Each structure stands twice: as C-alpha cells, then as structure tokens.
Image 1 (cartoon, rainbow, N blue to C red):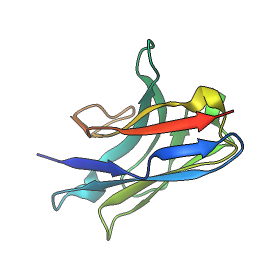
Image 2: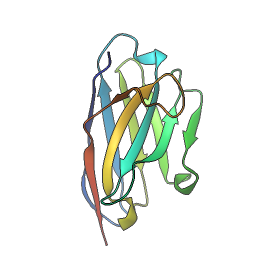
Image 3: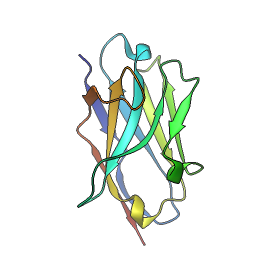
Length: 118
C-alpha cells in the first residue's frame, strides 16, 4: 500500500511558476513509476507526465512538453512537478499517482488545486 500526499498548489499569475510535491509512504518508493495527472472543471482527468523508478526516463503529454518537468528524490520518497510559463488553461486539480507502468494508476493522492489567473 502506498499513500500519497500532494502539496504546493495555489494561485499564480499567468506566466508564473509553481512546483508541486508529492510525498509517498512506504519503503519501496523507488520501485514505482510516479506520475501526475490533472482534472479541470467539467473535463476528464488527463495525463500530465510520469517518471520511472530510477528516474532515468520521463514521459510527458505532448501538449505540456517544454513547460513541465517531473523529477524525483528517492531518498526523500518525493516526486515533483515543476510547472513554468503557466497559462489559465493549466488551472486544475493536480493529482499524484503511483503504479507499476506508465501511466501509473494504482495509487492516488487527494489532489492539490492550481489556479492560474490571467
């Protein structure tokens, strides 16, 4: 069982940056693919990106490449999502997920709200 807790969301102006964090419980963090998803009001949850257990490979939604970066610190059981050049359409609840493959979907966090004002 893995428990995930996101943090770092908030209100930011367009063009700004935010870094989300996701802290995971358990001693096998490095064995999991970690990922981020988001869900905007009235829309389905969409894949943002994922990173393999060792951190050697990253996968991103095509529309977000170049602005969002996923990283992880296995010593801290934490995965990060660095978001730059934010746009109002990035407004959503961002969820952290863990699993055994890409996209990960076995365990989910409670989500953190990101609001980008124009």
